[in-house]
Image (tube, rainbow, N blue to C red; front, side):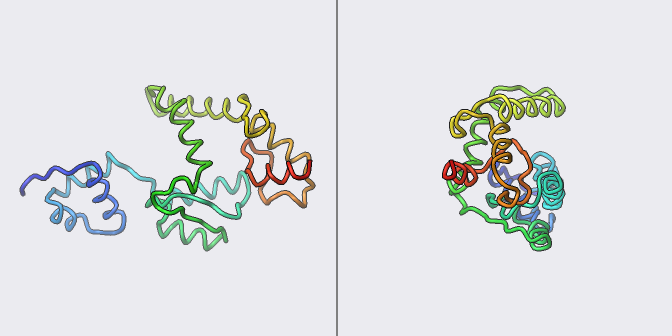
Length: 194
């Protein structure tokens, strides 16, 4: 078999085809690589399977309550049959942003940029455990220690706790227990009432 060098984007494209159900032997023939190469790539470029996303969502709902809607990009793990079936079963709407338009999910993209700049680009993780410890510490600082100008220089945890004290239970969204993250919709409603 003639050896073929593929770019990283091409490799990821092959892996997406495999995730979509294409047979490894067919992919290997079509792209001029061995089946072993495709298996090797899948270990280097892992993706979260849809079943794992569903398990994680179930854990989050158990902790924080059921959301009315989930907004995400169009990653293969988020558009899988497992995720779509889960949404239908529990009655949660899943909204996908338009591909190539990250500004449609601006709050998440802004947070991701901040985390990348302040933590991920600055820290050499020595192990998975080390990464988990550093990320947990960063989240603790971000949510409980650092004031945010968009929240009137309160921390997200303090802002969420204040919202829960001010609002009657009947006005609180389902699953709005005192959490460190508050939505802008709640911020606008609170400012309008004050």
